[in-house]
Image (tube, rainbow, N blue to C red):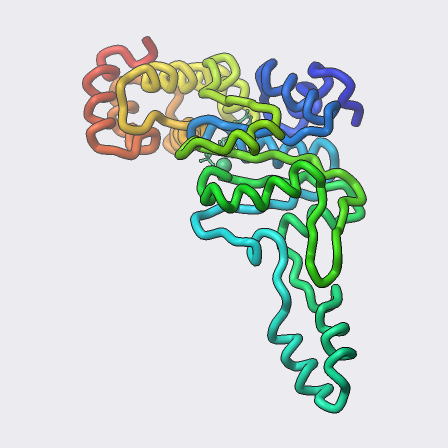
Length: 287
Ligand SMILES: Nc1ncnc2c1ncn2[C@@H]1O[C@H](COP(=O)(O)OP(=O)(O)OP(=O)(O)O)[C@@H](O)[C@H]1O
Ligand SMILES: [Mg+2]
């Protein structure tokens, strides 16, 4: 698959059922061209994680995912020694001298590789997704920096392992905290916001089989109206997809006041939001 221009990237993503806007296609193109990680930021459910998955499909690369969470450490992100196996070896080889044994048990056979090391060691090029990076502590970011700047990992007992092939890297963030300047500097920045109705209509048609053009258009317009309200949690693309599926399941052909009132809970997850949206929209669903 040739990705020699933003237009080609856009076409390839579309073929993988991911509908990018011009900015997404441009940043992904540049990232591939400049060999830089992409830091994808934006609200929940706008297609950040999906972009990395779609690029793995487009480039026919394996996707390696590091799901970040508070407390994620080196042992879960990079590697750890397989203590159990080491212990068994020590017990089995009690007669041998310690030098031989320690040389053995700190070899690759006793290493448990975690996503970052796996991406570095892979002989086939991969897509590395570091998902929800804003959830790790600032100190843990330092771990990522060595990988992202040099594509290498140093293991005291084994030396430095350098990537054979450079992974294509995506980091995603919901912006729950500021990321370090050092991390940002290494990445191309991509903000993804809610799609405009035209793109959301396309996304819905790609993701919801059997959805009519008319209904897709109505769903996208209602989604935009609802997002313009002052809500606790605006509906994401995943929720509009669920809503479109709901409408099909209920054999709805036309969104009216009654349908809206009956199905708001698929789009909105707070009772105050449902009440506010009901008040504002039921008199004019697709304004
Ligand atoms: N541009 C798009 N093209 C096709 N599908 C999309 C697009 N954007 C979002 N989607 C759909 O929305 C769903 C949610 O997207 P995704 O899981 O990538 O959201 P996210 O931004 O990673 O959210 P979170 O911050 O909650 O992890 C996807 O499974 C996909 O079906
Ligand atoms: Mg995600």
